[in-house]
Length: 211
Image (cartoon, rainbow, N blue to C red; front, side, top):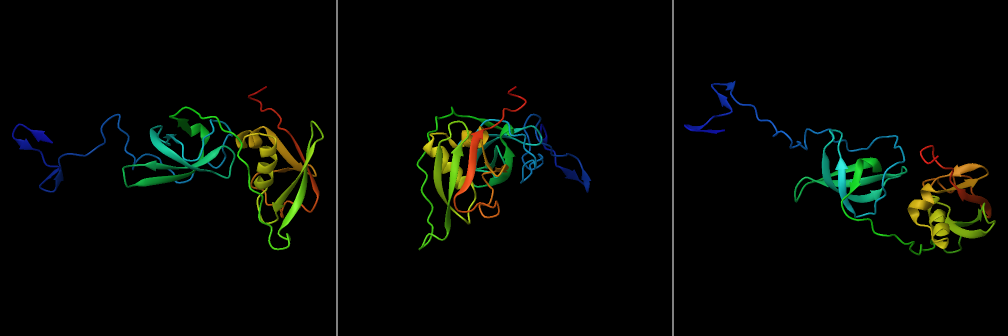
């Protein structure tokens, strides 16, 4: 600290004279509650983001930091992000709830993109075909997916054919096999799906907030 006679040292004769503290109103990134993994039980609320989109992240201390979306996490409405501290140091944060993020750029309209069919091996033994029926219209699709994959592959194919974006596909529609709910991360084989299995797609029940 500079004074009229010079500078005051932090310590003098082995005794502390000054204590360095962050300036008021400027959060200290290192001391802020900043977990590497997000909350374990997300509420399913909040805005949706695209991979690579810039935004801002609210830490446990209530401060907002610039961030970039790196991927959608496995839980509904959660994302993996990186938070730049400076030009060379990035802090990864996993499983962040969407409600702890906010957009800094206008949302661009998203259009369904053609989803490539999976590679099934030499004789096709690595795949099975699933019949997805629409509860409302009775229309159905025969979808080919890998046995060793997650069910999101089949979901994406069906929703692309119906011109439904991926966010709505996950939040506004459900897929059930023998009454059991299939999630995007459900394992195809462990879910009991087999050749020509019948899966029903229907509108998701409105949440209590929408009622």
